[in-house]
Length: 586
Image (cartoon, rainbow, N blue to C red; front, top):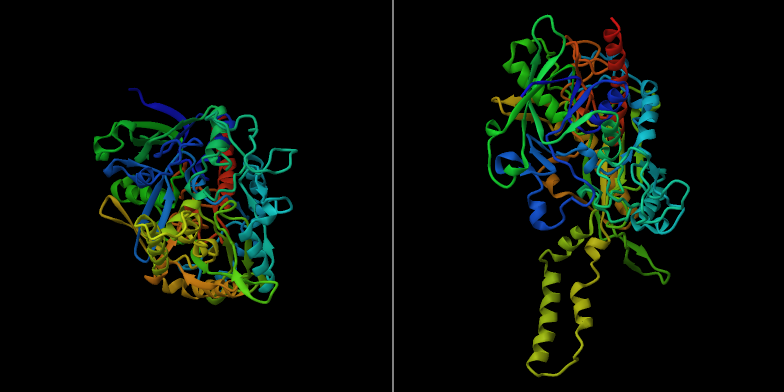
């Protein structure tokens, strides 16, 4: 088979890769996107226990699913594998990075600029605002329509509003990449959705948000404006090739005198799903392009660069900053259990929060940073966001079905009523009330409010290789301990405001964190001494090689990072197009 040639090869289809693909294709470039995962049209996301058990990325076991779960020293992480990347499982929030949180030259005066635990951003918010706008124009976000029913009655949103007022913080309603209505129509759940021209390459019906809380499990109703239904559909329409199940294993520069890179990848064929296989046994191919853009995510892109630096002499000059500045974006999950509120008669009763109703996140509370006052960064005053976090209804059933003394007692009571009647001892012939008693008030699941926090943790983690095949991350809880305790203290305040019990997530009991937003590893910097790429995503010392994903973050974004990753990719793409046009006009 002849080797295909492109102007640009994009590795990965998440918030960096999809934005790159569309912008480059619209500029007239021949673009190929290589994505290791498969397509997930609306309606294809698993829900049964058997299918969910197979819905992980573990090719050696024949599993080509959506969730890629990692465990490192002190921290665990969950990322996505599929056409559309993290947008398939994220919580839809589009918040811009705060202007004050772009930590910059003030660190030079502190003599800490070379410290890997201190971030330096070579760009400012003003450099990204037009790119944020460009991303919004494609994703078409909407705020949660709290002025309309049934949205105004969303219990968890109302609880957050009450808590924000009690602790004297403003409640924000961030833009969400979710369709609650068609243009010009009032919002309502489950309406047929009219796709803008060029969106929805699957050509399947979509609906406005059904308020089912299944955003992180994949939206089977197509209500989320995921990247496959927006950017990648438009990129394909503009001529880009979107190739799924293609996992890039290595790349190298073309021969002397030629500009560009050759990419080697393997194909995870559908026929191999369900049985063990080795990557070396997969069909393999190569492609070449003048520009290679790594957008495989913090783990994927950093792993590829670390491997190439170790295995190929051509990449020996990659920056020594490669692998540094890892951050979990301050992710911390806490819980409010058994929340109560006062009744009109002066008593108390369980508060119905119903975390299954609505999209996963509807609102946020912003906690300020020392940087907001213009002060130098302080470990004990790092800013963050706390957001309401819902979950699908099947999680409520799991919680209520968990064996407890209370549930066991209710079961025994129901069985005794049934057996007593069966043995002829009389009693009522109607067991409906007994069944209702057995199910109970479902107080645990109904009055629980998960809180998802994220913010400016300390980006002191280091990524490295174990042998030739495994990625490792060394991350110290101690470096971010002051930040974490500040988040937990604020979560306790919210719990008290809602008359609920504060609880850490079970992983915290083991002093481990779980991040959904891993960042860093190939950070931006002024030069090769301080970063792997420049402020336009260009790898120092390697013309034509770019990185455009979460790995380029020199520190935490603060709010949900997807929007900032996409805006940076839009900025990087503009510079790449200028370079391409200049070279093609010679």
